[in-house]
Every structure is written in C-alpha cells, then in structure tokens.
Image 1 (cartoon, rainbow, N blue to C red):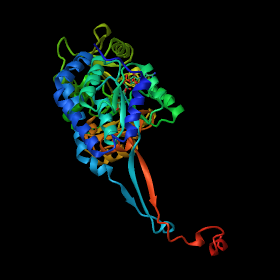
Image 2 (image 1 turned 180 degrees about the vertical axis):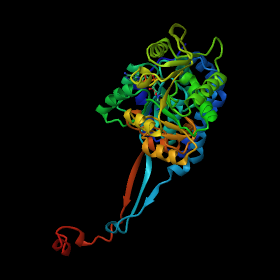
Image 3 (image 1 turned 135 degrees about the horizontal axis):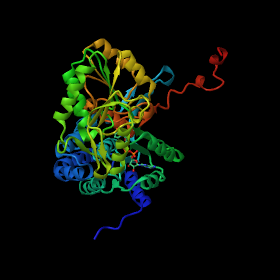
Image 4 (image 1 turned 30 degrees about the horizontal axis):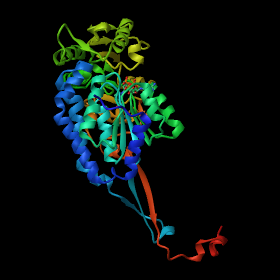
Length: 455
Ligand code: NAD
C-alpha cells in the first residue's frame, strides 16, 4: 500500500514549518545531508543507471560520467568548502559610521524549488539541490515528466536518504510546476528551454520569487586553420556523442576554416564512428521520445547541405542517425534552432573573423568553443564572443571545474551555480551594521550646526 499523497500546498507547508524551526541552518545538518547525497549516489548507482537506461537508452558508463560522477563531485566539493563559504565577511566602514562594525553573511532563502529537464535528469536536479542544501534551504524537486523512471527513482532516493521533513519531490508536468510556483516560494531554479524559461519567470513574477534560469541555445565551435585537427575532431566528437547530443553544452555546430576543411572532415567522421557507443545497425542514436526524434528527423529533411554520415531518423523507434551535414543553408532549422540531438552541421568560414561575426548575429550561447594553437586567437575569441562560458581546445569540459560559475547570459540564462556560486545563488547576502550607542554627537542631527553653513 502506498502512503496517501499530500497536496502541493500541504507539502510546501510542511517544508515551511521545517525551515521556520531553524533545523536546516546549522552547518552540521547541511554537511550531513551532503554526505547523504554522496551515499545515495554510491549505493544507488545501479538503480540510477538502470532507470536512465530505460528512460534515455543510455549505456551505464555514460550515465556514470554524465549524471552520477559530476553530482558526487559537486557534493564533495561543497562539503569540503562549506565552512569557508558560510563565514561572515567583514567590510570597512566610512568615517561617518565610526566606531561601527559592518559585515555581511549568507542567510538561507527558505523553501526553494528545483525544476529539472530530462536530458541529465539526476545531475540537473541533484546538483542544484547540493547548492540549495549548502545554503541551508528546504527544497521541492520537480523532475521532468519525460524521464518518468528516473523521476520515480529520485522520489524514492530522496525519501530514503535525505531529511524527509526538509525535502519533497513532486512529480508531474507543467501543471505541477505551475502549482508549485503558485505557492510563492523563496527561489525558483529552472533548467530547460528558453521558451519555458519565460513561462517560469512569468509564473514567479506575481510572488516576486527570484529565478535562476539555466537555459539553452546553440553552442558554436570554431576550428581554426592552426588547430590540432586530430584533437579537435576527437573532443568535438566525444562531447557531441554524449547522451546522443542531448546536452545543453554539446557542440551545436562547427565552423571550420576553409583552409583546413578538407583535412578536418575525414578526421571528424573517423572520430565519430570510433567513439560512438551505439554501433549496432550503423550509428542510430537513442532519443528521449518519439516527439523529439520526429523534430530531429524533420531537421534532416530540408537543410540544403551535403550529408557526410547518417542522414535519417526513425521517430517510431526513438532513433536518429548520428549525422554530419556539411554547409547547410544558413536559414535552415539546423542553423537557426538548438539541435539537441546527434546531428552536427559543419559550415565553412573564410577566416576567424567571419566565425565571430556569425556568432554575434545569433543569440548569446551558453558556451562557445575555439580550437586553435594561437594564444592571440584564443584571447580575441574570449573577448569578442559573449557566452555563458568560453573554452579553448575543448568542449563542455568547463562544467567539471567547480570553481567556475555555470550559467548563461542573455537568452541562454540568468544566474549561475556550481561550487560557491551555487551557495550564493541560494543565499541572501545579508548586510549588518552594528554601532555603539555612544558617542552620539549633537552635530550630526538637524540643523547640523556648522555643517549646514557649508551646504
Ligand atoms: P523544458 O523547458 O521543456 O522542461 C524543463 C522543465 O520545465 C520540466 O520539468 C517540465 O516539466 C517543465 N515545464 C515544461 N513546460 C512547462 C510549462 N509550460 N510550465 C511550467 N513548467 C514547464 O526543457 P527540456 O526539454 O526538459 O530540456 C531541454 C532544454 O533544456 C534545452 O533547451 C537545453 O538546452 C536546456 N538545458 C539547459 C541546461 C543548462 O544547464 N543551462 C541543461 C540541460 C538542458
């Protein structure tokens, strides 16, 4: 027999009561919950990889690399640094406030919600949860309805391992998210597409619930004429293949310098074939559901480019070929919409500046990559391209550096997390000034004595 489910309102009321009791504030509670997340990941590894295999058709080592290991790393890093992050910071006071002391510290926000997408359903709910816990909050977790087995498993694991009075997992689709946001929580942390991001922001607005939006977009890659083409091909292929390209920071399209295009394409093809985990029946890649597979298959129908490998999809079987399209039309869906699947367009550019202009014409990417040996070009690219992150000679790897803020800019998102950035996102920076009662000179009050004559 299953326990009766509480309404969203009742679940959030329970979390509010817990937060008000002060239970989540002590560092000991936070450290214990973080350690439990590590245990949950270590002991639950097989259940997690099995659920992800069912939902996403992923091989277990991809789930370990993509979901489990980075979540565990976030929790470990937070445990190691939390004491330092929580420390109050003294600031100097101006003469007018002498003799006073001023400082700020980090106050938990209260009850927050983490709304997750389906592509890394464990990582993208539990890594923000690590940040919420570090900051001393209670949290509602709303996993994606498109990965139902993982959503159910997250519900069970949170119940088994974490403080049941401080956390609730609420499953469901948009209506569940709307019901949660209607409760007027203290922060909403959303990972998903930019269009839904607007819906989340609008639903948060009536309550002035602050939002962090981790969104998507097209992540460009420039392969310059002086790049190490073997390494570029391998790293682009590897990061594109992960999770069938359904990764927000996967290379979305490649701009290759015309001088090395013909040398680069065979290397890219070879790397994709060699590194592909799904070689059965060619290189069909599993896609989360038939709707997304249909969207990707549609992109492959009308692009005006030359197909180097792959080229079709089978939405009924939730599969899409690992595909490279060379020089598709600029206005094709492949070049205007986020691909979020195993299709890689490669366009030829005359030089680096053309690539930079190309990126500049679009919306600001979540990440932008450049492969080059030239320090000068790396500097130029960093300065000229506005993106959530810029990486030289790799793709997606910045996600694994816990000291870096992870987040977008413009339509790729607002706010950031990971490490201390996540702790700050889920905290209020509270300002404090403490003045003694005396001295209390009469001169500082109206009519200000001699001071007034100077005005
Ligand atoms: P999505 O925006 O469709 O869904 C995300 C979450 O929002 C789900 O939990 C869903 O139930 C909820 N939701 C959907 N429609 C809603 C509505 N109308 N009202 C309220 N809630 C709603 O995103 P997705 O398809 O799961 O993920 C793909 C997108 O996420 C891509 O654009 C990708 O780039 C982006 N993404 C970004 C990051 C990042 O870290 N920035 C990571 C992964 C994915």
